Image 1 (cartoon, rainbow, N blue to C red):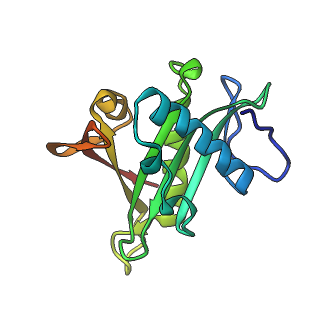
Image 2: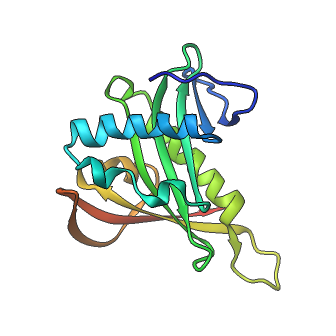
Amino acid sequence: MAGTLTEDDRTLDDGTPGGVAVVRVTGRDQLEQAWAVRMEVFVAEQHVPAEEEVDELDTAPTTTHVLAVETASGAVLGTGRLLTDPAHPGEVHLGRLAVRAAARGRGVGARMVVAIEGIALAEHGTAAAAAAPEPLSVTVVLSAQEQALDFYRRLGYELVSGERYLDAGIWHQDMAHRITA
């Protein structure tokens, strides 16, 4: 399902270079495009049960989704989401990062991670010391499929404990990266 960019989209990455823009999801139609990518990648390719893929967090007011969109065609290439919890300031969860097979190897996933980290820092960053002018920082945590560990390592993420676990039948490990302004 291809989407198109409109003036209402909030572009997080203008698509230079590579012809891919990362935009914040602002409406139900874009959320459905994100779900379509996730169903293609996680359910069809990786055999995650469909009932586990879309959850209540997708529509929570504390969740932010992004789409990677090919600027020339408007085709949606990937998606990711950012979960926040007001009870844990300065910490966010990056998840559901998915890139369509035809768009892999073009840096789309990395650009979405960088865009999500930018949102996390701008909207959820905290200062280490309230009394002193400290730079804002945020810790981004994620549950990485083991096949994607090196991808996240290249982006600065480190294993939290090295403990592996099954999630939807796929081996995962927790990773984290502290982002500072």
